[in-house]
Image (cartoon, rainbow, N blue to C red; front, side, top):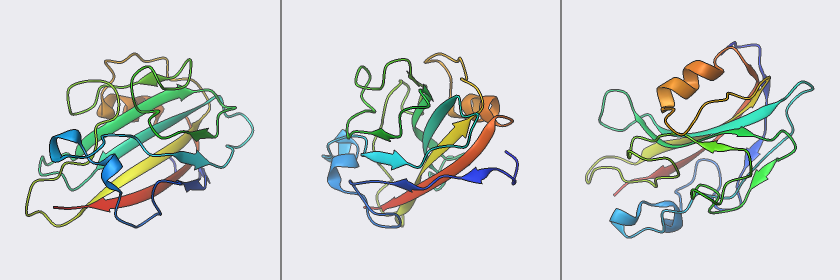
Length: 163
């Protein structure tokens, strides 16, 4: 991704940037709601053909982080997602969930190992000059590879969670 891309403002009604995420976003294995947050973002620049969203934990003890959510080929007229849009079947028509590190498409909530300091969960929104045209087998690494030369603008919001 070029450093000359524009910026998007990303906000959430579910949590504030830099704050602890609510239990609704935590993985169900830890008693959470496993529900993706509400998100909204400013419009991408002219030429935006789609949006892509990633939720990534760079602090997961895997040496390569952890992909919690991938949603791409979002229509350029859509500038927000309701809570729960990370559930397969509840995402916007035409968009595609990618294959997360939980081993399935769709949102997977926060689940850091016990005793770790709070992890930083980065939700990135990318305005792209094309649709990626990938399917649900696309992993985080593959999605990032596919969008690398197509980003017109980028924004992010980060939530924290530890146990």
